[in-house]
Image (cartoon, rainbow, N blue to C red):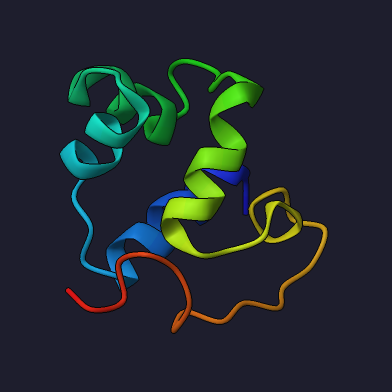
Length: 78
């Protein structure tokens, strides 16, 4: 699984919209959607913010580990 697929999977599991993450990153939803689809490469500067927002480690997003706790992060109370 590539980083964009992992980000999308976690986002879907936590019922977070693309728009919510895009707003958090300060970009348009369409641009964020291109990152998830793999059309555009996501700037590495977005990685720490996305990890914090989703409550997952960069190691998980980058595929260095498969360990994940979906109960952590800012959006677990949605």
